[in-house]
Image 1 (cartoon, one colour):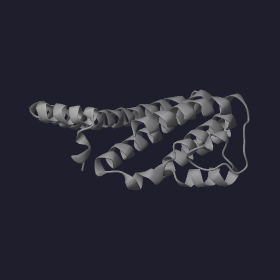
Image 2: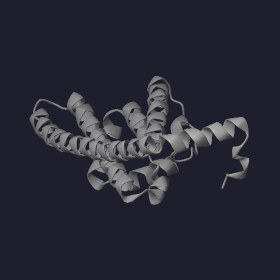
Image 3: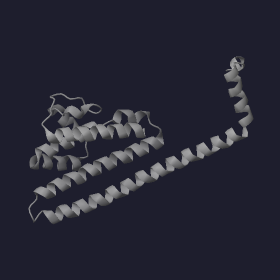
Image 4: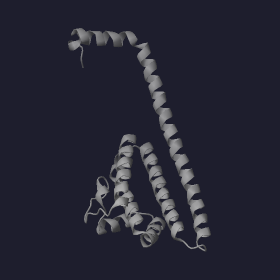
Length: 192
């Protein structure tokens, strides 16, 4: 799962840079995996509808302020929208996935606030700063939750590896004899 997320992140980063450099657009790009080429109008509507209302409102404000950054943010949303796989996850994976999804949404929200701050007049800036601090507090908490879930998972994996090591040590002779028989061709009748 980590590998998939890392691959998606790398593709997302590269594609985000492409979109920031030029107007690369396809009228009907597929949502989710492979959507790094562009986001069409229909996809844009679907993406916006899939977001929490507060985040959608922030994105629409960014669209008015900076259309190019809005396109890059839409791309990021489209590329990271891989909810299809969530149904196949174990409960602990689903919790980690949902936490990571909330982290991505909060990250996006803070980016939109940063963009708004850059375009705001001096009267609006203090409110945006307060909103940004609030969102960053929530984001920090969610990132810490994600880290603790990762630690919990790694602890379970470590316990399983320790148990496996203990069992293998206690069965060292049998394991060596089985491999020896495989190597010299005597083990073919003992296979399951």
